[in-house]
Image: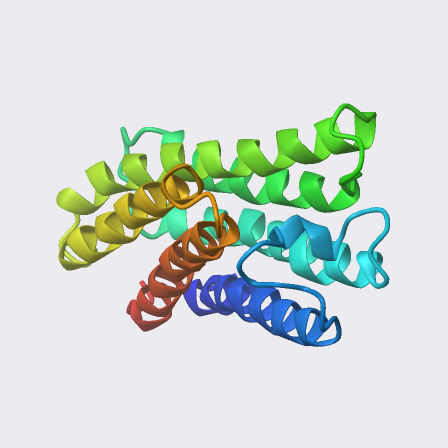
Length: 200
């Protein structure tokens, strides 16, 4: 596939995630952006759980894993580390896992909840591994070098807002949504940049 094909795959992931989120959250008047976690859209007792889990987590996760291959090819050198590829690929994989196993919001120790949390935390950990590794590749790549600072800014902001619930426990879910925003902004930004990359 061409870089543009990979870029389109990358662009589809945040678009699909956001569209599905806005659609399903608007169907539930009781679903508060301040207090309800994103995962509650796909929890075991959610009315449209499989719509969210499939179109909010599973398919976007698959798209990100596929996209990671093209993104890595666009800037790797002969001796480049595989950590950027592995990180973003597993970010997508674990996002998919979090959709396969819906959380039981009433039982934090249930197997499905534990597996969901492994997927959730695993996806973000590998996102960090991948993005910080990509920063090293971008510094020595003429085309990608100018993107390094804004993309690192997205990553650091996702970390900062990840601590939101500790600082503002009265509205804990705001930080989660902002973190999601910057995570998918990283994917969206790199996909646009990849789309514009001249084909070899």
